[in-house]
Image (cartoon, rainbow, N blue to C red; front, side, top):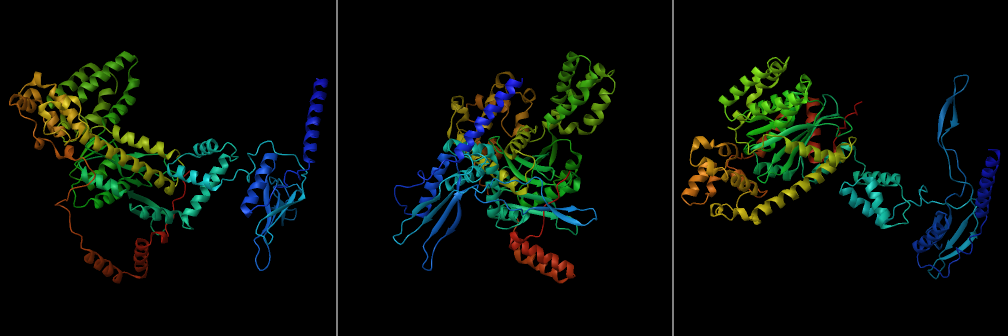
Length: 622
């Protein structure tokens, strides 16, 4: 062991000697150019390139641009020139209790009084010349340039690449990998990318506060935005925004909406209510987002009322699909009293299975129950439903607490919201599940990447996600208009090809397969597709086939006929009397006290100039 230790000491000593010898090398010859330089930047670039090849980082120590008879001059030195001066101090208490100052214990420096120095001048002939004042270093060369902040700086081209990738919501590690692929000599680190991103955001904010920057961006993108603060404070309580293109889509497809909350999407730990619509091509789109302090009825009502105000005068949603959130359900009933609130079948099944699985000791028994439960939930009519529930009680009545739980939690009060015996009478276009909404939530979280985003980064990411949604929706419209599948060459589709959604054509074709067994008998048909989708059912199709007639375009619900993002002019749309509203504002101002007038003035200023808002972001929750 002693011999091995001595051997290691000899090796370490040899490496140290090699480093010391390398630090005494004179680099004067390498920094002696063959010719003059036309510009200052050309000279500095050449010097730094030579220095990097030798393992040294050369920086500008001092520079004089010239003027008033003086010629330009630049002094270039090693990054380790000079000595560290203690600047950052912290208080320390002495024996008498008086505060003293001491140097922080975790400070450090790379400076070691390196003597290397170059002198560049710009004589009267307009070209730059370089003179080596001292060509030696008092330290060894760097083996790796990573970790040297100056060497890792991004040039203009690399900054532009980073900005483009930031707009695409690329992660810092992906940006760094891309820069390394483009330039193998790049010495940047992940910290370099984070610092460059933060610098760019500060430049973009232009000195605005966080809320001022958010409102500025929303205004620039023509978003609809509303927010409210806590009483007697400027702290944001709830905030709502909606993309203008998404509102156009909502006016085109207003009948069915999904609503659900997402969690762990922001540093304030605010739950976000995401309102999702669905197009005729079965594509989802994010209508609006509401960030709320709590999941209480009052918070939900505020968000939903803002949404309702935006579509005032246009058709309101007729079906809203949610999970079993009692506060949200109550808010929907008050804001959209005419809408039918359905439950997501996936949510119901997931909840039921999670709560009753432990009541079965054998997996086979549990699977048998799942089958019986599905027969109950998907009962075709009320008579069949009550027959299935009697069978369920007979077979599982002895399982402790099972039937009482199912009745109290779901069947007694909420069966009309998810059992097909009742939902088959609702025009929901097949949207009885929040799978689409859940997919939208998953996409949102995937885009956000982190749960520590602030409102500005959240909006930036959401805006990119919505733009991609709209591109996919436009593409789906074009596919329905232009692509004709072979099975739709049947003459019965003559008046529908290229005029209605491909999704609707698929459902009609599936219904055609029932015609041989159903015929023209309405009772055998059940007419479920007509009631739930607004599409011709089997017995109607049988009549068209018998008479050798194509399906009339008018037999298709208007939802499936819409294949663009431009809403039709609405006869229900109300005229807005701007003078009447402004007169009410003036009257309220005149009848208010000093505090009320100041509040009105502040709100008007915020409307006229978003970047002047005095509101601030909420505190981060533990």
